[in-house]
Image (tube, rainbow, N blue to C red; front, side, top):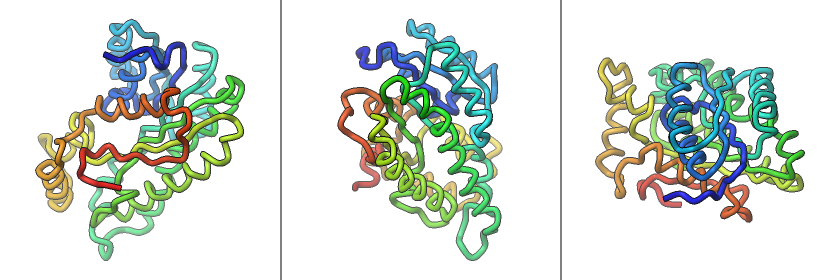
Amino acid sequence: MATHTLHEKVALVTGATGGIGRGVALQLAARGARIVVNGRSAAKAQAVLDEIRALGGEACFATGDVRSRADMQAVVDEAVRRFGGVDIVVPNAGGNDDEARSPEVRGPFPGIDLERVTRFVGEALAAKLMVVQAAVPSMRARGGGSVVFVTSEGGRSPTPGQTAIAGFSGGLIAASKVLSKDLARERIRVNCVCVTVVRDTPSWTAVFGEGSTVSDMHRKQYEKIVARCPLGVASPADIGRVVAFLASDDAAYLTGAALSPTGGLTIH
């Protein structure tokens, strides 16, 4: 059973209305954090809010596009209004996951649309960084904090056909190390969690659900991961537990790290 390692901390989780973000939000709430659930659907958010409250936790919903600095500032302002500030930021939402799965973006290099690929990389980076920049003043005012990026293992162990994902995620991992140095004097720690296939997520449904439109290459890559992962396929809660560790004082001396909870599929 989770202990209250995050008691009275305020955590802002983007893309928290489903998939990995929901798993992260629930694990943080189980440890005592008050959760700001960011997403696009109030209906989906309500289900997560109900689950958090069933755990005895506190939460609120704050809508906003993760690619918009103004929207992310509004989300942070809502966190300050409701809970007094922000201690933990989990940039989880991808910004445009449908584009990332498009065969024109994900596929063998000779045939991809490089204008779309480079546009995706820029937007995906913005989707992770905007919320952090907006939250830094609040974390600074509260004496420090923790940023935990959730990104793709493709940034550490690239997969064929993943020019866009590897470019974005590899860039984010490098940027997170810069942030860890820039923000250390503010007592703000910055780490990355790099994931591969996670069940019960939009990406899982896009590949294995009814009406799937991903390429055969994409599907076969997922099938290989499912078949070969030594510890089995991760659940959102598995990823959430790793994020919760990094967000807590148990990881107080850890910054600039990239952890890969891939069940032994990749080893670093």
